[in-house]
Length: 88
Ligand code: SF4
Image (tube, rainbow, N blue to C red; front, side, top):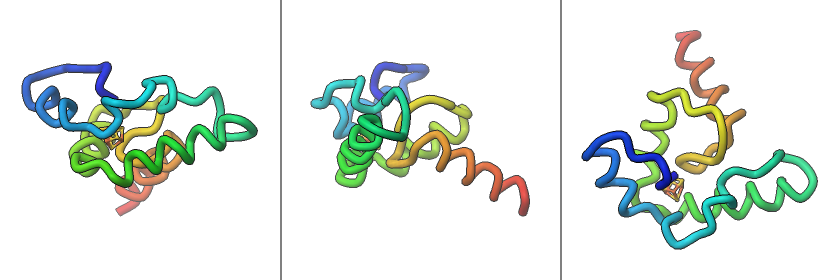
C-alpha cells in the first residue's frame, strides 16, 4: 500500500500503484469473512489491474508485511507463499 514509504525505490513503484486512487481502508479489511470478504475481493481486483503488482508483492514478502492485501494476495496467501519458499 502506498501509505508506507521506506526508501526511494519503494516510493517509485508505490507512486504507480492502482490503489492510489482507492480508499486505503479497502486494502485492510477487518476480516476475510462476511463483509470483509467482499472488501478483499474488491481490493484483489484492483491489484490484478495494477502495473506494479510484482514489485508490490515482492516488497510485502521481503518485509514480511502481515496485514492487508498487497500484490493481489491476502496475508494468509502471502504466508502460504513464504511457507512454500521455506520448504524448498
Ligand atoms: S498491487 Fe495492489 S496493493 Fe500493490 S500497489 Fe498495486 S494496487 Fe496497490
